[in-house]
Image (cartoon, one colour):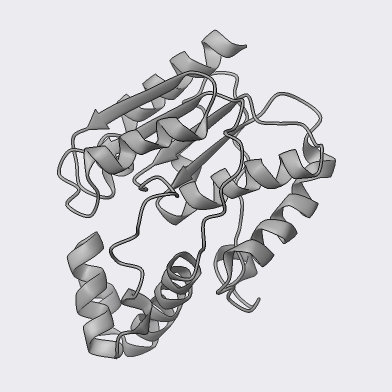
Amino acid sequence: MYHAWTGHLQEIEICLVNLPGRDKRIKDALQTRLLPLIEELTHALIPQLNKPFAFFGHSMGALIAFETARQLRRNGALQPIQLFISARHAPQRVDPYADLYQLPEQEFIDGTEELFGALPEAVKQEQEVLDLFMSIMRADLTMVGTYAYMQELPLNCPISVFGGMQDHSITERDLEAWCEQTTSLFNLQMLPGDHFFIQSSRAALLKHMTKTLSSLL
C-alpha cells in the first residue's frame, strides 16, 4: 500500500516499517502485545533519527505511531515534527471491538468483515492463504484488544487526523478526541471512503500531508 506513495510527497523520504510476521519478516513470530513491539521498534528507530521526521499510522498503525512517539519522549530522543493519525479512535476512548480477537474462527472472520469490509475472494478461496491472513488479523486485533492506555502528558508535536466518511467502525467524535493528545496544533480531515479510504482517497490524503509537512519544513 505505501510503496505507491513514493514520489508523491515531493522531497519527503518514505521509510516503511515492516512488522514481525509479514512482508520481509514473514518468518518472524507475530507479536500479540503492543508495548514489547513499541520497545523493539523504538530501539531500531533511534539510531536513524538524525533529521526531521514525521509518523503516519493507519488503524492499528496509528496506535503504534502514537505510542512510539511517547516512548521516544521517555527515552529523551528526538521527537516527530508531526503525527499523522488515520482511521483509529483516540487511545483514551473505549474500544468497542476490543474483544473481537477472542471469538471462534468463523465468528472472528464475520466480525472482521463487518468491521473492515469483505475479504478478497482470492483470500477466501485458498485455505492456506486464508489461515495466514486470519492469523495476522487475530494477532493484530489481540495487540489492540489487550492495549491498556496509560495517561501521560500530551505530545508537543501537531497531530493531523484522517477519517473515512463511510467508515462505520469509527465515529467523528472518536477521531476528534485525539485533540487531547497534543499541546500543539490539531486538525481533523474527513475523506470519502470506508475504513480503507487511504486507498480510495489517496491523492487527497497525500496532498494534505504534503501541504502540512511543507509548512513545517
